Image: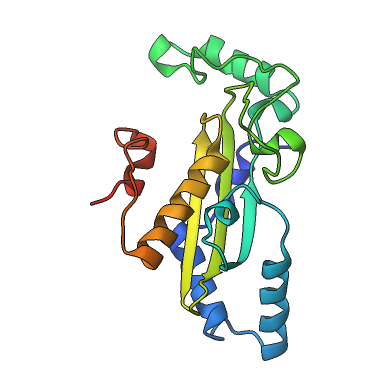
Length: 200
């Protein structure tokens, strides 16, 4: 297992939105049957119930795909390799591990704590170990039939609850489209990791 492989196999949120748009417009290069099969699979997905799904207004329907990376400590030999790299570093400025990142206990918080896609309730986090990716992309169908296509990618997060961040973003977008109002975003303002979430 190689920690860096996941960084060579990636997509942008923009590309994900474009793909979902092509899917609902029947322009993804698939037959009608294949399009219906993919859309059905996305609609029946039961992962990520604490992500986009949690931010939906009543009556909205979600077709989505989640993605969850791992913790560095899940890669065999990671800590030994990192310790060796740090020992070979010429100064403290080039250390590869943050001072506050410690070997985690066996109990872990965050989306991979259950081995799934964040379906546990992370309200009582126990670890601040980095998680490589927590993502959710989807097509939201509002009760009035309008669609919202949303792609939320969080990478290299030390947030104890990235699922909540995704749910809050989804709720903000849905509220904006259904009520015309922007909710209070003070919780996220000033956080450099959520710049695109701030209202403009």
